[in-house]
Amino acid sequence: MIAKKEIDKLLGSYDKKDIRIAAICSHSALQLFYGARQEGIKTVGICKKNNKERYEAFPLAKPDEYIFVERYEEISDHVNELAARNAILIPHGSAVEYIGKKIETIKIPIFGNRRVLLWEADRQKMLKWLGVAGIKTPKAYSPDDILGPAIVKFPGARGGKGYFVVKNTKEYNARIARELKAKRITKADVEGVVVQEFLNGVRFYPHYFYTPFSKDGFKCQDGRLEMLGLDKRIESNIDEIYRPLVFGVKAEPSYTVVGNAPVIMRESLLDEVLRMGRGVVDASFKLFGGIYGPFCVETIIDENFNITAFEVSARIVAGTNLYPTGSQYSCYIFEDLMSTGRRIAREIKVASANDALAKVVY
Ligand code: ATP
Image (cartoon, rainbow, N blue to C red; front, top):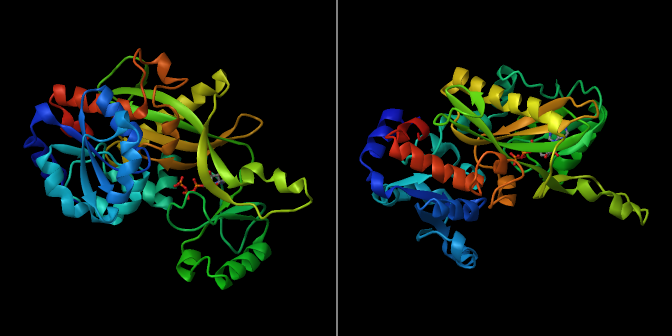
């Protein structure tokens, strides 16, 4: 892991009057560029030539400047150009995927504590984090001892692609053999498999933001926790699996995330959802020096209002793209129309003005 003081030194050399926000042109980049523009911060888009048109199509959400790359994995070859522009990189889902293990060593200031990205990438670590946060997680089964419906997950964030549900070990073995034969999975996938109790209920994905710079509101550590939004993921084909049934056709269910939809929860559920977010922040301080900025806890709520979480995303999530002009919750915290993208830009502005960028950047 690159030393924090090395990043602090680089940050110290930045021109504080011209800090820029950089993002890979994918995932939530439109929201990030738009939000930065609203806060008066210039932006740099790391972009494949073919993707430029997508951003040019949205003049208010295109970056002020592009750095073109052949492949996003190459971003580490462009750190000097980014540093020359006083750029802070915003990690989003695609950045985490493309930068991969290099996130530990890449010499560019990253918004938030980059250690969290290692904790979210490793399923065992992530479940430990949720445990320390006092949040209920699904039972883990050994593949030889599956007691009831279980979801089978392979290594790496795949947005649910290729996951399936089995009811017992016999079904598991048969399905694994089928998947291997069809070359949809590898032996390495089977070695890294996670078999988890299948939770019944409704999925809710609250979007949180932890800031050390504001004290009013929902107290958390030295600052406050903001609930900036809430979404529900739309998955193909499980969410509309009843459609072929009309014609008597039974489809194999799949859980591939293809989009997001806005939702609102019963107001009384907010207490626990806020406490859960605080638990995640408190645990992050105990385990690895804290989480700053946006994160999301992926939850399922059952008919008795029990909330179980199966994942933490320790960065801006794509569900926030629903709310570029603020959400059903952010409007109760900010007079301004506050998206998560804009909130990140605001945090960078406040930190910079208080000479405290190093607190929220690593
Ligand atoms: P990402 O990292 O992009 O969020 P992933 O590949 O890690 O994706 P998960 O988010 O863990 O995948 O799961 C994908 C989908 O599978 C979820 O949105 C949910 O619908 C379903 N799912 C995951 N775990 C469970 C569970 N324990 N019980 C029921 N459904 C689950």
